[in-house]
Image (cartoon, rainbow, N blue to C red; front, top):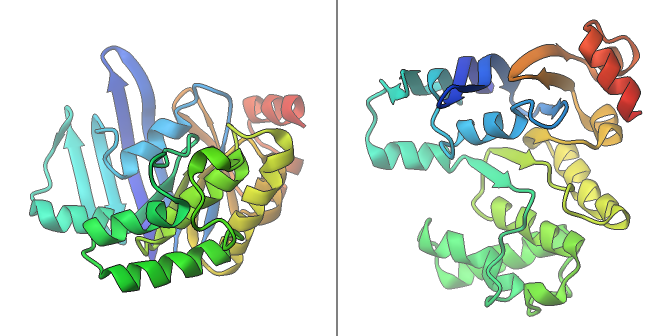
Length: 252
């Protein structure tokens, strides 16, 4: 099953074209990494999947269901708001910034959305949150506040928080870009385990080592377009497009 499929997605900010006819498919249990220079449209594309950005034109399917079919910025798909919201909850997202509630403990941060959005019971949400925090290696930090945690620990809490909503797809928007280099590995380790567990993942990243090791496919974006979409070996060892070759050479 195609968990995510976009067809000719375009996004304009006034006269600035940020996405240009982006067509991409992510299958169930697939890990796809999007790489490219800053300003390529990578993060905007990710945000267009869950309606954080409204696309100008094109189609977005989630689990083979047409969610957005836009023309001149207007979505032509008629769907009850509740159904659309429920379907979009299938996408968990982890941002560059951790966005944790500073006045809530680690455990409370992970519990808050399941309780208020999914209407889970306090006991069930707490049990689930504790299991997830153990999964990301933070079972000893349940009652700490975010200010007491390192950046890597905060990002692992953010991952647990996204997983608490039981998504079928995880979107990662440069999840390590705000971290000190020595903290990057602990976050990538959690992401690698998610991939091994079969989670469908779409990852915008500058960590080319992670992309080479974990991704099923690597997508290279430049100036709002997909220039290449291939296996990690093909992208890193034998890129077809000259701009891809330049990028790989400069980064590696």
